[in-house]
Structures are given as structure tokens and as C-alpha cells.
Image (cartoon, rainbow over the protein chains, first blue to last red):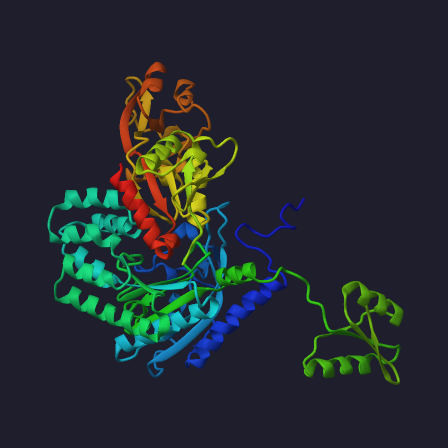
Length: 400
Length: 210
């Protein structure tokens, strides 16, 4: 007996009507924005070789990937991310393309989450990757502006873009004389803002200016005052340059009319092997998860054999759409403006008449009934306001 | 920007009482929480906040999804459940430890056989032995874990130990400590950023009154 033929796997669901519309609208807004800024679309395969995602900097837990094998027994995964396949693509088919390359995508990614936690395993992500560009600061600024614009399109008042720089943490932690495991523990504790455990661990490492700065790192978030605080805590040439650059980005973004919507968190320290420069995140109020994630990853494309700088971000389209449809309408079947019925022998005429109306901009359904009377009854039931009968001449009947 | 009350999820039971004590020490009026009856969402007067009472695992779920902004939950639950949130304050109460316990006098690591461990916390147990590079068979027990070695189902147990009285009375003893536990204040990752001022104020007050 089949047990699973009526349900979808955990973490996935069917989308109906308004949900699709909401998702499509979010996608359209984003892809419209991206292509308007000169980005070209790419689509990468839904399945890829496991090797693509198993490199050192690519932080995917084996247990979180959906895996299968191909006909030759090679390990395949359902793509958990779009940036890495695009890096592969840039390093191979696009290796001779002129830089900078502006690419965008809008496609599903898959992640095998823990069961029964209300998480989705299939998420549509839309984003951009800006590859190359002689001046990285200009590229960062362009991508950040695009991120802010994208967020503000969805909720002008209640969004937040948060900037950080992975270099701040990397510079500090590199000065510690500890092994890789301890560095990773420090990173973990900073990323979860676990002050007590971080203090204990750094207390064991030693009491000096660097450990002191790391202890305060998780608290370095907020507005422009963060830069002043950070400068007082610890500086050297590299760190003060990082802070200066980041402050500049912060001020330039605020100057676009987004004062109060831009914030800073120097404690963003996830994927340290992957990111090499600025990192940023976007939030919409009422959504308890990060909806936008991005940063500079100058090393990744090089891992595929073609050294190249890059910066980009991705937006969780599904999360944004759910948010918008929650504040918007309920899910309902679409009701067309009219239904067209062709008498016996007028099927061709009826459907071409319907098509004519459609190209003129109305939403028209084609009747599948054998008689005009049945069509009329159906229109009444469905709330369709107009029935158009096509025979020798065309007659319109109003319903309701 | 937000006038909605901050929502704090509390683990029902002992942690709830300790937390309410702490909130009252800060100076908040927790009468509604003390005289809760059967209500599950309770306002805290004179603070723009409300308390939600939940089971430990659910505190994490609610905070992770952002339907509660903050939560008070034991480190044991955090370690077992894991998840994405900020773990900002060690509240210091609810102190106890995870330990590996065996029948008195037994040497857990002796011999070459694969050991069987009974526990309510399979994830913590798995990680503990994984870190040692040791293959053990883990059996999840829902009730009194101490029974498992007595019934010869398991060679040892990994469980929360407070005073050790239950172990002693059943002829078991702590063989090795796994890690200490205490109550933690956790915060949703987005809430902290979007309501930074309110949350930092509250966290500041909490830390000051520990």
C-alpha cells in the first residue's frame, strides 16, 4: 500500500493562487531591478556534483544536503546554494568574458533541515553576483545600494540593512597564538553573541589588548557610534583601514535617504573561510529570520581555478512573499472577467474571440460545457459577471 | 519604531520562578505572572513586555522563529536542540551538570566491546562520545534514566546531575563530568537588531541584578 502518495515531503509545500502570485511579484520586482542595473540572468542545474559544494571554504554540513547518485554511482546533491555554482560557471564557461560581469539568478535551493521545526527545505532565492571590477570599493557600494533598494521595495518603513566586515575579526583572531580549534570556538561564540562563554574562553587564552577586543566584539553593533567604539578598543593599520572603509560605505548608504535603516554589526562572523571583505544582512520586521545575506568572496572563484574578485547577495523570495501575503489578501481562486461559449460548430471562432479579448487585456475563460445553459449556471456559481455566446453573431449576457 | 511589547518566553517550573524573582528584583511588577491561573501569555506591568510560559524545547522554537523576542532556557536544552539565536547571558541559576554515570565501582572505558548508553539527551551524548572518537550505542529513554543500567540495558547513562542523591540511592555514581549547565537568556537574531535599544536596556538591567 502506498502511504506517501497524498502528501509532500517534510519542509516542502504546494503553493496556491495568491501565494504563487505573491512569490511571482517578489521575483518580478527583484529581477526587474537587477536587469535594470545591467545584470544578466543565469540558471544553474538543480542537481550538481557533491564535489562542487565540498571545498574547504564551502560550509555545508553533509547531513543538510539532499543527496543521490547518478547512473554512474557519482554523488549528486540538490543545489543548496546558487553562488557556488555561479562561481563554477564563471571559472569555466565564462572565464574569457570581459569583467566586470554582472549576473543574477532566481531559483530554488534545497536544504535538509531538522524535522518538525517549521523550516522550509525548498527556498527560492534571488540575488546578484558582481564579478571582477577594478575598484572593489565601488563594486561593494553598488551591490549594497542594490540590496537596500531591493529591501525598501518590499517594506519601505520597516527594513534594516546591516553591514559588517569579516576582516575585523580575522585580523584580531590571527594575532592570537592558539590552534585552529580554539579560533573556531571563538568564532562560534562571537556569532551567537555568547558573552559569558566567550569571556571564559578568552580569559584562558590570556589577558591582552587582542583578547579584550574580541571580548567586546559581539557588542559592536548598532549605528555609527559603533565605529567610534571600535576604534577606541583596538586599532592597527589594517583594522583602522577596514573601519574607515566600512564607515564610508555606511555614510554613503545613509546618504541615499536611508538614515536609520542602515546599521552595523562587526560581530557578523559566519562563513569566515568564504567571505573576504564586507558582509551584510537584511531584515524585515515581522520576519524572525534573516531575509537577505551577502558579502565579498574574493577567494571562491579561485578555488575553481580562476582567480577573480566577487561580491553578491541573495534574498529569500519565499520568506518575503509569505510576509507580503500575510499582510495582503487571502488565497483565492482567480475569477475571470468573462467566459466565452461557442455553439456547436463555432469552437474555433469562440476560442479566437476569447484570445482577442485576452490580448486586449481582460481575463477570459473558455467554456468546456456542451450547452449555453450549463455555461450560464456555471458562471453564476463561480461569480463570473459576463457570458459571451459565439454563434453567427456574438451576444453578451450579464450574470448576477 | 515598535510599540509592541517585548515577548519573553519562560521555561515553566523552576526557571520560571527564578526568572520572575529576577524580574521583580529589577523592579518589574510580576503580579500577573505570579497569579497566572491557566493563562499562558501574561503582561508585565510597568515594562513594555509580556511573558509566555512554555516547555523548555518550545522556548527555543518560539525564539528561533521570532514569535518571542527573548527566552529563558537551560543550557541542557540549548545543547540538545541547538538552533539559531543569540545566547547572551548566563543567568547563573538552575545550576547543575551533565555527567556520565555508571553502576558504582564499574569502569566504563574498560574492555573492547561497544558500550551502550541510555539518555534523555541523545544529541549531547552523541557529540560527547564523537569528540572522543568513540562508537557507542545510544538508547533514548523518556522516564527515569537511572533504571537502564540497573536493568542491565545500558552500561552507563548521560543525564543531568544536581545533587547526585538519585544516583546514590540507586547504586550509581558519577563517572565523568560532561559539562556544566545553567539557565541562559537567549534572544532572537532579528529582534536584537530591530529592537536593539529596548533589548539592550533589559539585558543591562538583568545583568546588573544577577
